[in-house]
Structure formats: structure tokens, C-alpha cells
Length: 234
Image (cartoon, rainbow, N blue to C red; front, side):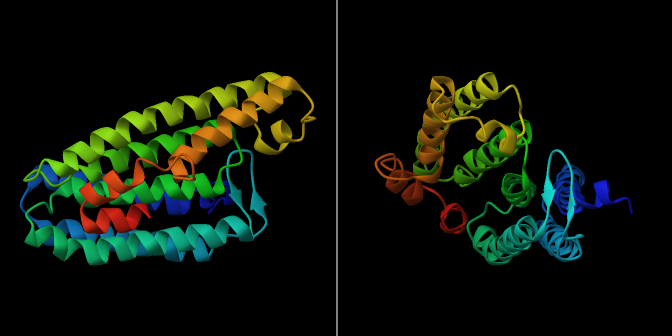
């Protein structure tokens, strides 16, 4: 396999697994065990494929070096464990539908892309894939109003945080003329545009990561989300 394609292999497997779950859900909506099995196999295959990545294979959008490989394996393993332990919980509470397992895979895809991104465009896409999947996962229990309230709070604050991140990226690009992370951050920090961009970027990421003092949304969201989703968020 060409190394440029192999760098994306774990992400492609996760994406293909999510699509397969959605297709199976459209054909047979009540096959919770089938959805869980596809999701488990997909996340395990992505983890194994990440182990075999060439350590020094890098290109313009993602990194396949040792650092990226480690986090790809770690995040794929966490996705596998979340699906493994959440499946029975979801079945007993009546929300083990196809979208639940597919969205966990898509959230894993977003996390992996965040870990390996070397370009701000890829970083932005990864951040939104992860965020949109989490918004829906938090509200996956339809028999209670609390998860929906938590999802709305997370969505509103997440949208504001995303806007700040994108504004920061735009300012970094304006200051450096490059969307490559290394090139844009090598620009002298004495430039006002660069400093302002870093401020917006770090503030937006602070909201996303629940860093003090931007963490006030966390208790409501964690309390309202289903237990496996709250564990996945943390």
C-alpha cells in the first residue's frame, strides 16, 4: 500500500465502520448486537492498523510519526473500550440504535484526526467531526429531558468555542500566510496578529477542554449525559 494512503488507514477504517453501521441500521433498525459487533471490529482493526504505520511517514496534512502513532493507537483503543462497555448499558436502557455506535466511531475518528493533524484545515475538520458527534451522543437517551438539556448547553457553548478557534486560525493564517501548523507558529510572537490569533485559539480550546475558568458547563453536561458518554467525554 502506498504510504500516503496508509497514513490515513486507521481513519478510513473508522469512517467505513460508521458508514457500515448506518447502512445496516437503515436495512434492519433493531439489530443492536450487529451494530455493536461492527463497531467493535472497526475500532479494533483501526487500532491494529495504527500499530503498523511507518514511523517516519509524514505528509502535508497528517503526521504518521511515533508521537502520532502512539495517540492513534491509544484513541482507537479507548473507542473500542467505550463501545464494549456502552453496548449493554445502551441495550438495557433502550437506546442501542445504529446511530449510537456509528457516532462513537465518528467521535473516535475526530479524536484521531486531531492527534495527527499538521494542517489547520484538517484540525478544524477533525474538531467539528468530534464536536458534532458528541452533541448527538449526549442527547442519545430520548426517555429523559436532562440529556437533551445537557446537549443544548454543550452545543451552544461548543459553537461559540468553535467560532473562537476558527477566528484564531484565521488570524494565524493572516499573520503567517500558511495553514501549516509548524510554519504558522514559527512566526514571531511579537506580531499583534499572531498574539491575537493565539489568544482566540487557546480560549476556544480552553472551552472545548473544560479548562478553568472556562469549565462551568462541565457539571451540567456530565450529569445529563448517559454514563458511558460522560466517561468518553472525560
